[in-house]
Image (cartoon, rainbow, N blue to C red; front, side):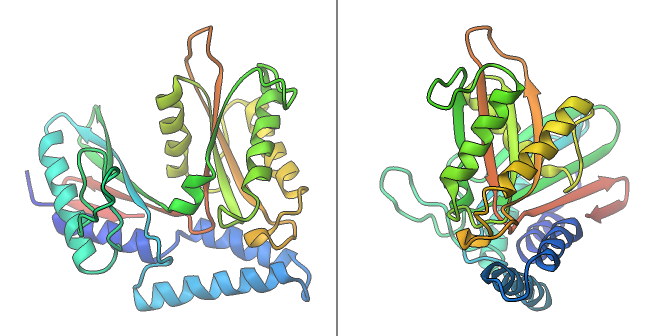
Length: 290
């Protein structure tokens, strides 16, 4: 198996320093929609300028370079053990090259490892073996601010009058946005998982962030709910960084997971405006980062 360390380092560099075009376009559209004299337009202007500076100088978009979350879809002739070693080596080297800030601290002592390597949970790596011969590595860099405002609900929820139905999902999603206010670095994006257990529901709610902004669920009813949650969240007028204004949520994606009849979890993961997402695809000798 060839050494992919430099390819993964470049994946990390691009993810940390250059937002995908679809994310930047969503932010630019929000900027255009706001009043010229509004605080929200000024905040969005600063965000867009920050994006340009980071890309031009190849420096991190945010001082919190986040938890590296890898979703690896690998052919049978690859080794998950070997790929784990490559990814961990790339994370350490990317940290040494300052594409990542040393963020990994021991959960009990608070001691910083200095290279973004912790035990098996940091960085976060998820593997799935697939048919075919194409290796795909999706990387999310998820900051602490947006991670802190993620929420999980167990339906029914009598305090929110949310039942075990799609309207109940909408109600708890809007509650999560309302509770976050500007603390999640709005405008942001929602990943929502319905079902699963407490752990798989959180994982599924983050995995949808590997998809492009504007993609929707194949079920028209769920796709309509995604649009409605985004619309209703913006009607809360929380706005960029919580300073007021309409751009609060720029996109919502919902996924489902089988659950036990006794459990009905709805998990909302929040992604800040610095929606750092990139994909490395290797097929034969062809290598591409998108």
